Length: 217
Image (cartoon, rainbow, N blue to C red; front, side, top):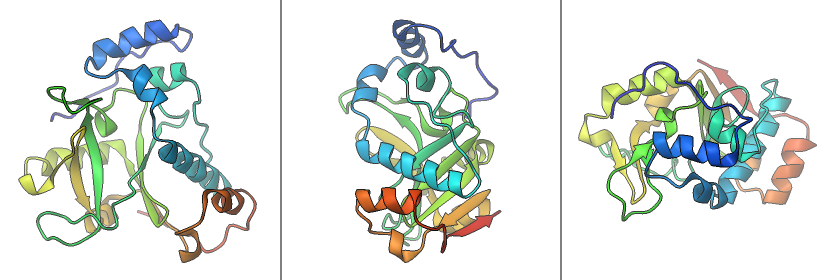
């Protein structure tokens, strides 16, 4: 998997949905983005809302795009932060050491397992992304996209770092490496780990912002 160098010309958000579909069919011919959008994980969307609200209160406002046109034409938000929920990272073992605690840095995807090959996604998606935010309700890491891509280029050739699911491929990043490479890390207090969705909304929108450990690399 090769690093994508430089920026590409992206379609104007004023284009029709059909125009944007055609643009991304050309860039990513294996993926039906309209279907993918409709079936997008509600859990991941909720995580994005929670994290965006929390970061805004902590002084890092994010303006997320809601429309299909803007998400496909530009990216996830104005600031260029890609937000990824990695539910299982705390329990995922790193193949080389078998130690638990490993991020899945997504590189490619396909809409169903019967397709041949994968198309670029995650850190190799062609959009405005400059930072990757990844984690769960225990902790999140923020990496510059250049650092994330360089990490993949360095380690992905090693089979110990290769991750693959039926519809996704990724590069493993053990927590110890994540802690050496982040720009910012946010550690949640234990009371936030197992909240219900309703309690998370209240917690992140109304409760005092206390107990969060915000670290800068």
